[in-house]
Length: 113
Image (cartoon, rainbow, N blue to C red; front, side, top):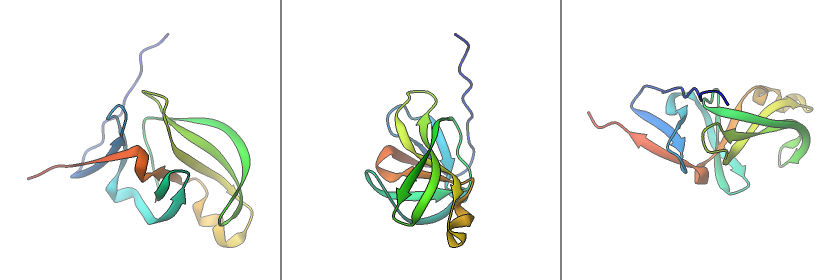
C-alpha cells in the first residue's frame, strides 16, 4: 500500500476530523451554516481536503433530489458528510461541487495570536 498524503491547511480557524484530527476545511471556505445533516447541524463549504468520495447516488434531501457522494476522512475513513454532484432543481444548482461537513463530526482549531 502507498503512503498517505495529508494536506495541511493554514489560517486562524481550521476544521478537523473529530476522530483523527486531520485538517478537513478552512473557516474561510464556509458558504452557509444553515444546513442539516444526518447527525445535526452541518456547514456548506466551497472546498474540503483529505477526503475520499463514496459512490455517486441519488438522494432525496430536504431541498429536493440531488446526486451526491458521501465524504470520508482519508486518514481514518469516518464519514464526514457529502459532496453535491448534481442538483435537479434550478434553485439548488449553486450547491453543485460543494461539500457538506457535519458539525458533529468536526472539531475546530483556532490559532491564538
